[in-house]
Length: 219
Image 1 (cartoon, rainbow, N blue to C red):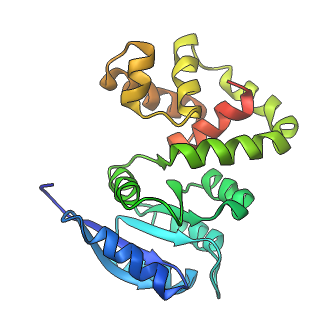
Image 2: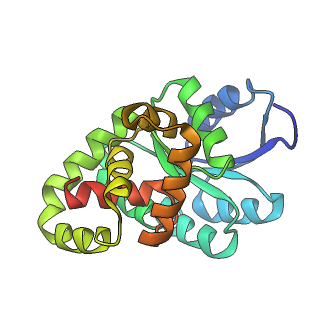
Image 3: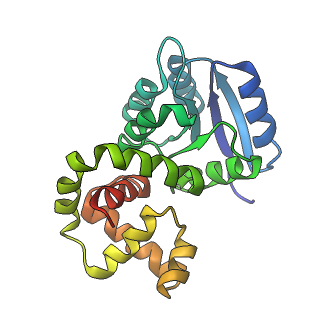
């Protein structure tokens, strides 16, 4: 990769987790781990002082938890993209994090290559959803909360054209632009244009939020 390197802060209160993530990320020559935080408050301070591109943020941390840190990062360091680190046991918190501007989430036992892909995607301004984890988490949450959210989601999707709804449905499945293009017989660039238009119409910050709306609406 040429050009500026991707500057990353890792925030987790477990030293072994931080060490493992650092080892994986620094194996990619495009990524610099510029700092490590043991709690949410440190993560916010380090993101401010190091002008980082991506923050890998655990949810369960002392002093300031990951959700509070996410809110503070979105307020004070809006350019930093936040990826949530989680376990299946924290599904409800993950949904809240994504709804409030997280750039995606990863399970702590994710494969090294997927972790690197997620950081690269977030740094490029995209959201990253681990396909297997996304389908599992969103499906589980949708089951319990669909009744309360479906009407609002369908109302918001009323502004979309039929083709935009087709693209959005595939976002809800966790497909990339390239894979969505293959399914819809479009070029990747065309899908990307549709995604940008969908995000603007739905007033969504990223494709994660749009995907959640799609699933809530039953697409």
